[in-house]
Image (cartoon, rainbow, N blue to C red):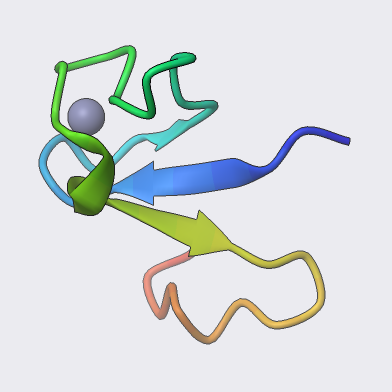
Length: 47
Ligand SMILES: [Zn+2]
């Protein structure tokens, strides 16, 4: 299972590129927040 991250810039849930950046908008790794399967309180706006 690949780790999923939510991008603070574009708001999309993404699998980061090998360099850690967002594949959608190119935001750097520090703008991506890890989404944990069992604890999604990091994302109060989940669908
Ligand atoms: Zn992004």
